[in-house]
Structures are given as structure tokens and as C-alpha cells.
Image 1 (spheres, helix red, strand yellow):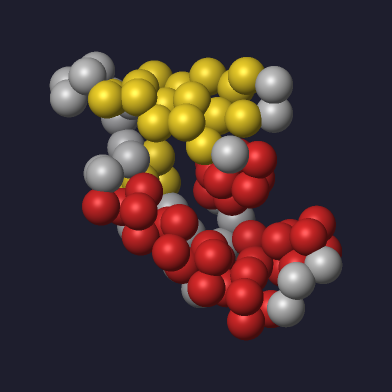
Image 2 (cartoon, one colour):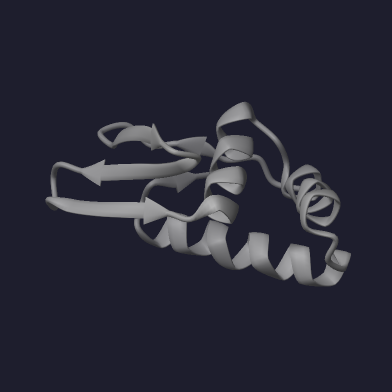
Length: 86
């Protein structure tokens, strides 16, 4: 399973259990909800997709299939915005 790294140039801040990411180059602000915050935090820790999926299953009592789909979708969004890379 893949591990990801944060790309440089983004400013991030944690506020009330959520994460706010600012892209100064494009003047864009991204606000992550609680689930996005959990996934993003795990990515920063160096967790793999499988490890993050297991954490979602445990935290939200959802199926592994649903958790994997959610992680994959979210990771793809972060990659498309060039916030993370492999």
C-alpha cells in the first residue's frame, strides 16, 4: 500500500479538530472536515493507505470497503490539488 508525502509550499493549521490548508501560490484555502482531518493527520504520520483504512473502520464503524473507497477518493483529491504526492 502507498505512503504519501506532503508537498512543500502549503501552510496548514489545526483548528477545533479540523485542518485548514492554505495554498499561497494559488491563494486557495482548503478546509478539511473531521474525517478529512483524520486521514490527513495519518498521511503526515507516514501511514499507508491500508493503515488509514483500518483506522477509519475502527473510528467510524464502517465497512473496510467503504473506508478504502473514502481514503482513495480523499487521497486522489489531495494529489490532484498537489498537496501530497507518492
